[in-house]
Image 1 (spheres, rainbow, N blue to C red):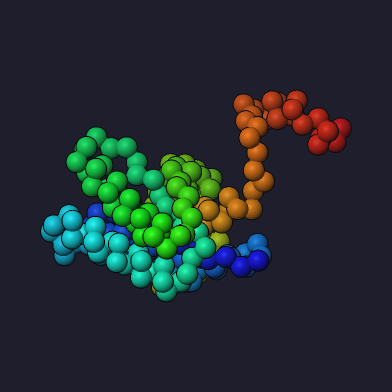
Image 2: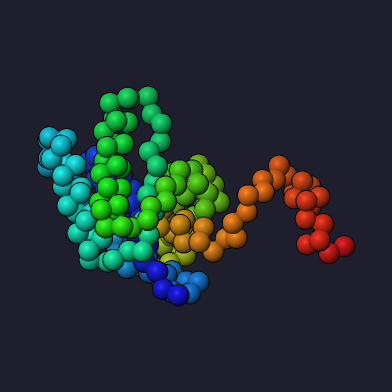
Length: 184
């Protein structure tokens, strides 16, 4: 099995992207970078550039799936609106190319990578570097790019987990609902 996953960290000034190639049960970084939007003052021009660049990345790497970080809820409504538009534009580029999308909360990505939902961007980047066996130079200077790679890696980890609709409140709850799976 081979699959390409595109990860996106939405932004209105810097948008990160990371591409993973998954072969069987291992992942390797194919690309890592940012879409720099700071030179565009007009928000609508930024959205157009996001669509063009994400479309270009999709054409270059032909991802099978896209993992995108969900915007976090902030106090500034205007910033949230602009960030949501940027995320929606990246999603529209994927939809336009029939690339399935999965959205992950920032805390879920951090938890999947570091085991701590409150981890810093630097901690996420360092764990990704270690897990993917990358040199520090390969990580780039923008943490937005490693956040995007984190979304892709989180998606990779989710692909390898068995899906279940059963929710557990504790280990004791798990044990009581799975007696046939536990050896005494």
